[in-house]
Image (cartoon, rainbow, N blue to C red; front, side, top):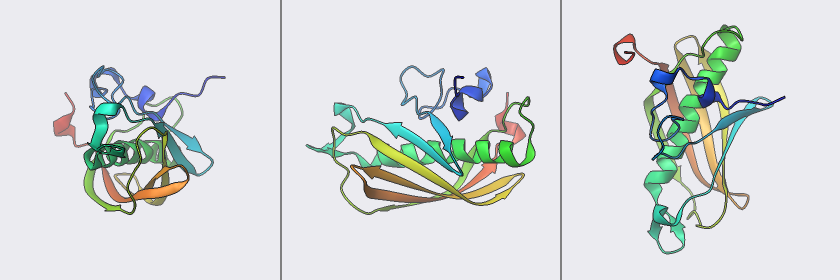
Length: 153
């Protein structure tokens, strides 16, 4: 059985995000999955994601936390309120606070983990950590809200 990433279930017209859109060949192409009650995504930075030699640019870290968070919110809402046959709801970021805890080294795979703190049909609160070599380098606290109809074409 093949497990699809949360982002692979998004409708085609809503799959262009720079961070996680499968239809954006220039983006990060982040893929998020369930790992029991947490969510997980893995990403290896490219050399051009450098802040200073040997370390990852903070904007990339924020982007990864953002996209893993909205994907996790979508999957959590689908799991809690939807059916397996429905298209999962798309969520967008209403608030994101990131604490950078340690320098993030280049040349290693980064692990993002999401923990759902509160879930409602139109709002999800969650925490995301980004780790390198088992060390938590950044922690994000997110409020994700269901994408407003005005954003859907």
